[in-house]
Length: 481
Image 1: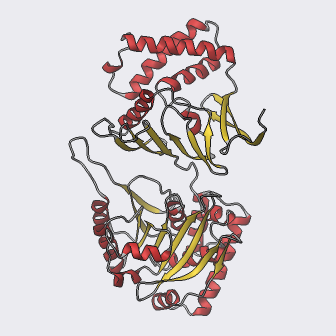
Image 2 (image 1 turned 45 degrees about the vertical axis):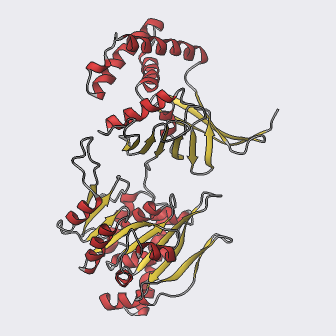
Image 3 (image 1 turned 90 degrees about the vertical axis):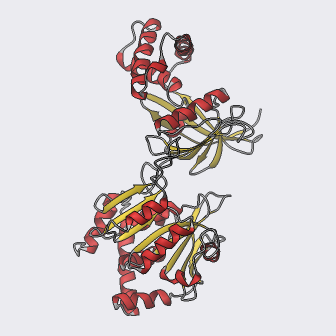
């Protein structure tokens, strides 16, 4: 018998269902196993439930329940709920209301929901849920343990395609053989990408990136050593005095989370316009914030609203701050840099591995911004994720010099897992002095005060984004004691 090491176990609630999660590693495997088991459904009940599901599916297949005649998803759910309730009463005539709700929810989840994927989507420890095909188990990305295999399988390629079609329909999008790629969102805010054969050669795929139930905050970043106090205070100072910042990093490095953290430092008396392809940013409720989201064209190719459309439109909305989910194309970048040159503060993300590469990417196709325009962005923050450990860190904080070249101020040391100071800012302090009149001594005192406030947030475990927003609003209005 192979030796099995238990790594973790906890309970996940999915509506009325209680699901046990156990994560373990066998000495015969190289990837841990994520195993689920429903605690409040007995094995005998599970067998009867399978009979109910089979009878229900046969009724749908025979046309007894005419799904095609019902246009709205909510009406389909109502019809299915009524029919399933009848079947449950047939097999469990004396069932109580609580048990009825549990069993009905379980059967509904299997037939018009996403099956056991719903359990994974309810687990707050998971970042990603991945279906590669029907031949192998579903994979998940766990915040602590990284990639894990699960004991869940989607039974057929047809079922995977059904899930993708259902997700697309609820998002007013479609996925077909002619349009085999889908980008959509679940009602929960989770991002979904799906592909169909033969585009994905081994089978149909679904990739779900889970929307954070609670957005990352500056307290989380400091506690997890993603930021240190010095970097946090420096970017806060830059944002307070309306200086633009770009956040660079590779895929999954935490760029958007870092951008969300930076938005916590906005003052409450300024108008913020955010522009994203999919809604990910969550700002404090006491901020004057207008979120804008792009829209894909409909099947006839009409109705598209692009990032460029929203960027140009945002300048007509009297913004004090413009936040952009990702800078990808030349025209978008030109409009944003022009906005910076006309006095707007801009914050955005960019795919790049380090500060030097970010400058190269910005100044070459497809973005191709003249290097002489880059100094309008005083600071660049680079995020990184160690794929071996799963840890996300601020890799670099750099100031952009008059030449457009980055000058590293802070650098992460992976051996010590510490963010080390490389040198003091020069141009950044010159810009602050030009626009605020602050002397180096005043800047030093200001940074020390900010570190004190940040330490108070961490010591008191203030992780709620609205409470942090309230603290910063009091700071800006002189009411913080």
